[in-house]
Length: 415
Image 1 (cartoon, rainbow, N blue to C red):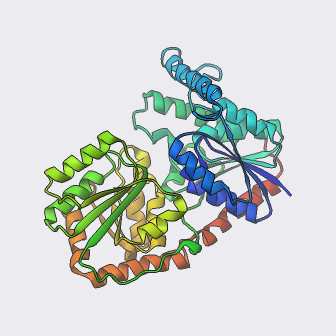
Image 2 (cartoon, rainbow, N blue to C red):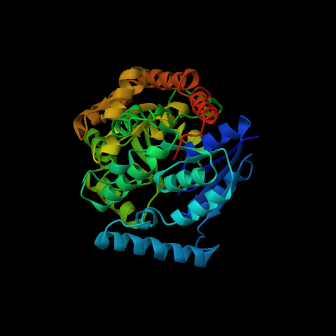
Image 3 (cartoon, rainbow, N blue to C red):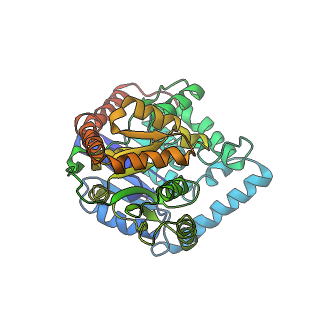
């Protein structure tokens, strides 16, 4: 049985894409180990439930506030010192790797210690570990680009964030044996910088087993839904609140699922109040397990994909929101980023889009679905049909398995 090590500087419960990949590989005859680090306490409790029944092994490194506290504290100090020193002295030696993520060194050490045929990095913080472990163990390595990392935080090419990522990508991406990307535009962006290997596009779709039954809506209320790991400013939520307020219809509600701090919640409640929304028109839902989102989302009518165009990554990414809404049977309303506009052109019966920042058109779209409930039902049914027939993990994982099997069948490329 061939061994595969998947590495992330996040947590499994925060990365459904990693979990789907680990499940697919383990179910197809590979012995899979996932190496990860601590990010948050609420995600740790979700990890506990998630990992109980998996047929692959998960190893946490770098400690945490409750377990391995001194390791956790030491890694935080090293990370912060590296970020500080790189500002004044530039990138020298392994300083840029230490400034990349809190547990870079621990991820590298653990990955090197586990002999495997393939090492897969599932985010940028894991890339050095995958490449260096494959070199040590004379194996192959791959990288999954869920984002366009060098412009994930900012488009300022002189910024520390951009420079650190560029140095890491330039150093390690030429050494990978394959690259997968989560949207056509992300794949194109990386291909223009690194001509080989050509990225394989693997969408953030979900299993057909998670499909929710679409039921005709007979209630007056029109329920809008948005979710992310974190609820915060500048993510399009402001547009939705203002668009709803223009309609002056108290039966239209917006629910936000995700982790939110007190200041952000107060900000959105104040914005809703100032915009004239009623007390129950804006609701907050605390984080839940990824597998539970579909049943929750199915209780709503419209799924909002409100991505912005800045920085570039937001413009070209195709997040798991859209595919979650398809699987849950929601009509999609999306901002016209490059990636989302292209998606709706390919799947026009899945919903409607609005020009970025155009509150009036967004408001009109919401009103159209509220006024024409037959259109709403037909759109929801179309979304469910797309998810059942094509946009599902059963179809998409075939591409992943082809990439992995082809990579393992090749002779080892020099690192």
